[in-house]
Every structure is written in structure tokens, then in C-alpha cells.
Image (cartoon, rainbow, N blue to C red; front, top):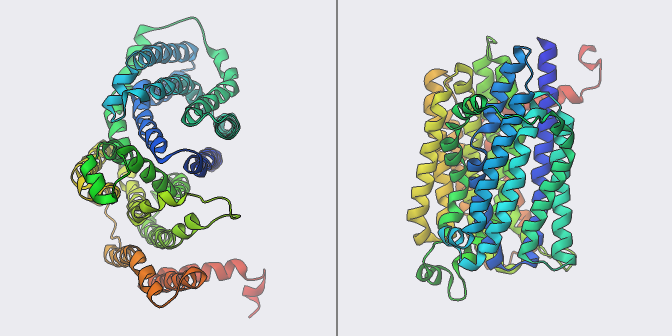
Length: 514
């Protein structure tokens, strides 16, 4: 049993590290796009990439999950899974050709449907190529996971991203390919991943089983609506922001901006949420095997309560710190030559508190998911997802005309909060834990107030002639005071952490010297 858990932990570290590294590398491109492309082009890229993610769910129609399930059963019966591998691969190959062909044929119409001009159809065609290549990777990657080949999996993932990033830099900086370079670079990255998974394709046989295909579809297709709803929570903002009426743009931001400019600014600023996104992703990779391992322990519920408190404190303090200091990093003129985001993007910085604090609710939801997964009540997860998607969509529809970028960001926060509430309702119902909701709410409310007050604080300090480095010192002091507030609210947890650190730092043998 212990050896199996060690294997799980090892694979989790490898899969988690590769995923986090790949996502982090992609964000290296954000300053490149912001400095070398127009806000208008950034808006086009943001909208198309949001819809690539949605289209990917349709292109793959749940076959990754269904292949893992069916192939696992085949292997348990000591049967040859290669016919199943071939059936799944050829199914996706044929349908991705069909879907890509439709995108190529109707590219201008698709561009109009997602809020862009017909001339942007050329980028829809690039997107079709990306989706086709990415779909070819689905079954081979699933096979690597099934066979627990974590290192080849990680290598193919990371090298694909590295190849894509390098290609994009060369295309935009060296060849001046502009927005086309973004899409071509992404496609070349997928080609690199394909080259690394070529050894897996030796399992392909010239065979296709309609019966196996029906079995795969029966398991995979029900995942499609939930997958789309899950993505809408994070992507609907761009799809509705691109449709903001021109009169609302003029009222909110003045003349000289179009919907694509606003969407481009929003997308680039929102990308700085990666700081909290990566933190939660790292926690999730460790948390899921941890709570499954300790679910039957007598002290499991008090333990999970403490994990909620400590992770909650950490993510709220991080959200406050990011709200206070990310704008300074963005506005800093690195080497006198480069801004992370040029000044024309700074008007979108007001969305940062809402974006950062939406991830606080994601962290709480991640903690709460333990109760649903431990009790096997996973049938309620789609309800949680659809509730969040519905609130986010409705919020964007109502708030974007009123507040533009800020309206979209607030809608994201509301959707995350509703998902958190729904997750908590089902989790505590089936796996009761007396979480410290009062103390967590107090800390969260104070943190959100600090974050929203940030811009007013800068204006107030400027009135006293305090700016630049001195203003940063004042903000650092406020963050430290907030951390002190957190330790006072959760004094027992803070004391336990201090004692744990002291034990780690205490020299060996000193505990028994008294």
C-alpha cells in the first residue's frame, strides 16, 4: 500500500511540475505580445484563444477520459489494448479533419460569430491547424499516462511549449510576422510535441472497431457539456467583452478605442492572475492525493479544517500582496527599455483585485472538493460547474455594458464565489466539517477591502508627496499589518506554524538537552 502511494506521489510531482512549468513558460510571451503587437491584435488573439479552448472540448469529445477508463479495464483483463488505441486515435483523426475542414471553409463566418471582423478569418484558419495538431496528441498522451510514463509525458509537454515559445519569439522579433506569428508559433510547438510522442504511435494498427468506438463515445460524450461549462467560467468574459457596444466604450474609456482594444488590454492584464493560479495548481496537485490518503484517519476532519485555514490565509495574503505590488512591477521601466505592459495597458489595472480574489474562492473550492470526492458524490460536480458558468455569463451580460473591463472581472469573481458556495453546500452536507467560516470571512472581507482601497491609497499618499519607493514601503507596511491581522485572527494556527518552523530549525539533539 505504502509503495503505491509513493508511486502516486512521484507521478504527481512529475505531472504537476511539467504542467506548471509549461504554463509558466507560456506566460513569458505576455510582455512580448503587449510590447510588439497592438492592443487591437491582442484582442483578436485573446478572443480566438478563448474559443480554441472551447473548441478543443468539441474536437476531443471526452475521448481522453473514456480511453483511460476503457483501456484500464482492457489491461486488467490482460487483453491487448492496441485495437482500442487505434480506434480512439483514428476516430479523433477523422473527426478533427472534418471539424478543421469546416473551420477552414467557414472561417470568415466563424470570425463574425465570435465578435470579430470577417478579415480575421485567416486567424480562424490558423486556429483550425492548432486544434487539429493538438487533437492528434490526445490519445498518445493518455497512453503515456495509462502506462505511467510520466517522464516522456512531461518531456513532450514541456518541449512542445519551449518550441512554441522560441518559434514565436523568432517569428515576431526576427521575421516581424505580427499576429500571424503567434498562431504559427503555437502550431509549431504542437508539432514539436508530436515528434516527442512518435514512439507511442508504434501501437497504431490498421484497425477500427465500431463497437469500441460506441463504448468510448458512451463514456466520453457526457463530459462535453460539463467541460464547456467549466471553461465558460474563465473564458466567457472575453467573448462578451468583444461585443461591448461602441457607445459604452466611448462613455467608459473615451474616444479612440474599439472592442478589440478593450479585450486585448483586459486579456493581458488578467494574465497576471497566473501568480495565484500557479499557487493553487501546486496546492491541488499535492492536496488531492493527500486527502484521499488520509480520508480514513480518525483526525481527518480536524486536519482538513486546518488545511483550509492555512491555505486560505496564504492565498488571501498573496492576493492582497499581488494587488499592491503587481501594478508597480508592470509600471517599472526595466533597463529603461521594456515595460511588462506598456502604458496603454495600464487603464486595465483596476481589474486586478477582482481577478486575484476570484482565485481565493478557487482555493476554497479546491479544499471543499475533498468532501465530494471522498464520499463519491461526484454527480453533483456538474451542478456546481453549471451554476458558476451561469452566474459568470449573466454577470458579464449585465455588468460589461455598465463597467466594461471591471464589470467582466467582477462577474468572474461572482461566478467563482457561487461555485464556492455550491461546492460548500454539497461538501458539508455529505462530509460534515465545522470549518471556521466566520474567521475566514473576516480575513477575506478585510483583504478585499484593502485591495479595493489600493488606488485610493495611492491618491491619498500622493497628496502628501509620497510616491515611488516611499509609497512602496508604505504599502509593504500595510501588507505586513494585514499579515499580523491574519495571525491574530488565526492565532492558534499561526502558533502551530511557528512551532513547526522552530522544530525544523532547531539543531539535532537540542530537544533532549534539558
